[in-house]
Length: 171
Image 1: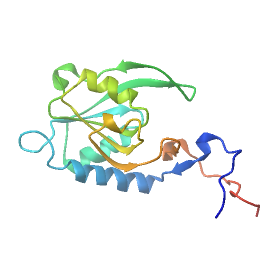
Image 2 (image 1 turned 90 degrees about the horizontal axis):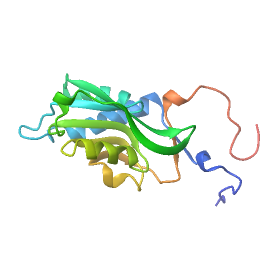
Image 3 (image 1 turned 120 degrees about the vertical axis):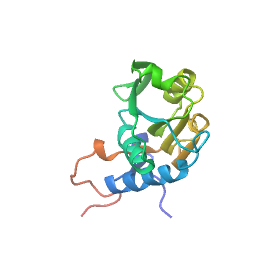
Image 4 (image 1 turned 135 degrees about the vertical axis):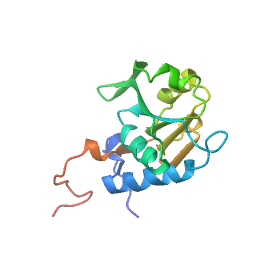
């Protein structure tokens, strides 16, 4: 059995997500959410948490035939480090109300701070993410895949195709 390298940085324990994988996982999220809305099982609207939630929210909205879509822009990272959480742009207040019947979608719940802020603003909304880490999992009602807290998820919009050195040895 190979021992983990002690000289690895925390973000090097990576989970690389391709566009195809993200699309499959976002569709799986939609399937889990289908019929789970209030009353007749439908959702009034989808709100994407920008920026990471925009692609999964679009896929979920397409799969569930939800035509009312908005965004909430929340800033919680500064140069890769978590800082204070603040809303930069809110969704339409009349549409949102207390969140009843609204599906709020993000790519990942990590510490849960972003979703906690959004849950305080819209307590009756349903919060869904594609991926969830243990610390943030209590803030999300529906997710597809859990990853360990120390795993860094590399999303396709953050990546470029280039050569990467092998984990052990060389070519």
